Length: 384
Image (cartoon, rainbow, N blue to C red):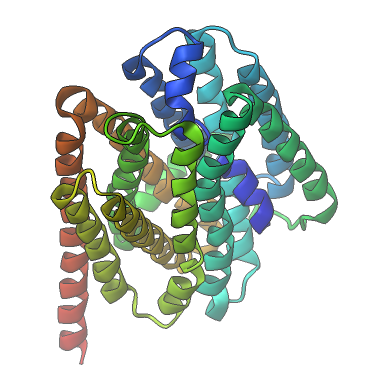
């Protein structure tokens, strides 16, 4: 499950170190090619809302295999795309089909005993995070040795292998058998938002921290490819190796959620994001500051997300897919918005304006985490 989730979700991040090369190949500008990243994130958000809730109605294994098959077709198409509009459409579809990873996550949670949900979810999320972060290293290296089209051809091959393994290895538990129509299923997703205050708060916090994450990694490509660095895609992709370290900490924060210390953990992790951005602002062209910022931002973002995901799976088990849809849709809407805002800030004010908007994302996330911590602390004092 962990490997399959990582391979699927990686496909929405391959483009980030490739944007400059793709712009040259397709005869367009950096500003226009930035839409590729936005559309991929948006496609993932659409897939989360319209496809992943089916996990509460249909067998999840069948959904995973179908999405993987369609993902393979879209990846092959993008490898041969010759015009920007074709690449944009296929990027949207890749984002939608890559949501197979988000069908796996609630499947793993539903199969886990209650006292180990945080730990198990943390392990699966480690696979997702590793896929997200290793995607940049992989795509940067392959594009440096060959070109960006080979990235998507090889990715199609990896998803094919994953699909075959999923067919033979993945368990096939029965769904929670939601008996209503597809329209009622989608409507019931919104019901989960009304049901759970915890879900609303974690969804907003998730959107804020992932907005910062996507904004940073998209604009970092432009920053490193220009003065004074002038790095190629292979060197830019290597920055993802630093970020993989953060993914290895995911199970640790999942265990903290099991021990019911999540609010304090979230204050710490969002503070790390702010410290990372401060490094970027104070030393914008220092390589050591970029390295420190990558580590701090990614540890902060990924640890926040693992804690949030572990929390939402303590809610209604019969609605795990729909609850996951609410959280992850908000999460990736935040990512798409962060990517869009980051690209616009880069076009308007360059790296200085990018770091200012990153700081805003981080501060808002920290304030929300602090509000939750103080409210729960007061509630505990009253109960005591």
